[in-house]
Amino acid sequence: MITMDDIIREGNPTLRAVAKEVPIPPTAEDVELGNEMLQFLKNSQDPVKAEELHLRGGVGLAAPQLDISKRIIAVHVPSTDPEKPESSLSTVMYNPKVLSHSVQEACLGEGEGCLSVDREVPGYVVRAARITVSYFDAEGEAHKVRLKNYEAIVVQHEIDHINGIMFYDHINDQNPLHLKDGVLVID
Ligand SMILES: O=C(O)C[C@@H](Cc1ccccc1)[C@H](O)SCc1ccccc1
Ligand code: NI
Image (cartoon, rainbow, N blue to C red; front, side):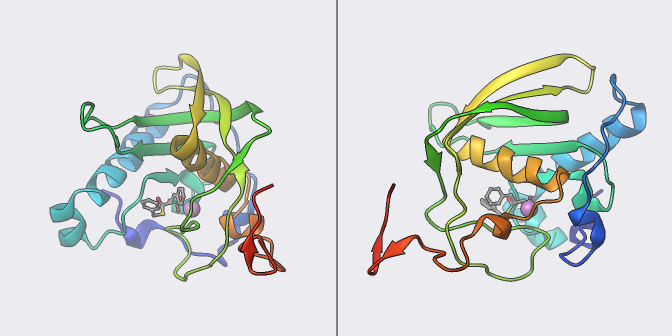
């Protein structure tokens, strides 16, 4: 079972490496890894298990964060629609790839964090508002999905990890909050 002890922190070179594609269909080992990554996210969002296992809440996890330089990500984004309580996006993606993205941009109002970063880094992380992603599932089936808003942000954060990119690489150091004379500038 994955716990916070298995997650490497900034400074570990694996977080800056471009991870390797995995064979498709995924091996039994890679399927097991993906399932464990997804289970970690579910546990991290369960108040009892998170408390018991001292887990930080997570909606995404990439294999490099486990010091495994493979192009595997897991996402478990809770539903915000009370009519649809099950998760809005819950899956393991093997060899995910952004095929296209919107010109329109988006960012989380509260900025981003990272399970591999034990510090607050203020600033808007500007990303594409909508993306089309291809990936393979545990059975080796190909998928192509269009994602928007929060789901798109989470998947972009995780795909960044398999490309050695950290969320703060996107923050404009000179103007992290995109202010102009103290006013937030929305291009
Ligand atoms: O470190 C990771 O990759 C997991 C991140 C993913 C993430 C962070 C910010 C924005 C999008 C994705 C963790 O989920 S950070 C903790 C967290 C938990 C719930 C909501 C937002 C961030
Ligand atoms: Ni992260």
